[in-house]
Image 1: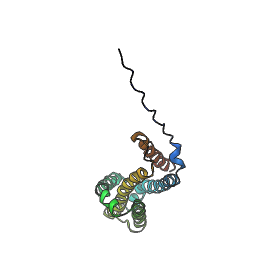
Image 2: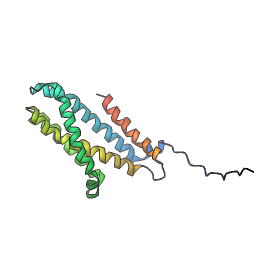
Image 3: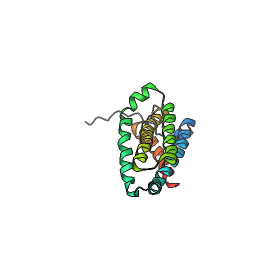
Image 4: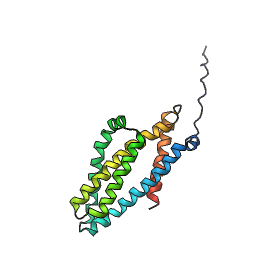
Length: 168
């Protein structure tokens, strides 16, 4: 005879609205939207700045690749940074790096080399933001949710980032 399997305990379904009722999570999404809006606006302005300082705007790809390479050490050192300071401090440091980069671009960009040196700040800030945002979202999600539900929380952060891009 066939044995009837024991009844599996019914898993509670996850309601993503619970995340948005969390004040800190919602506030972080608003902050992420605003910072991505500023970052993407500055990135959209960069080819015009390059053209203004006498550099071909086709060098934009070189600068973007350089910034991506600068992100890697920040991502790799994010674990040590997180152990030495809290996530909100990393996020503040990220904002300081972005601000320094934008201020220096507006005042000190005179050649391709100076733009690349200044864009180092934006590369560092981007690596910090990626690492700290992912970790911060993880700390804000309830412990009882599974990996799929955590990814849902991260996707909402990506939707916010996309919203920052679209509003340009």
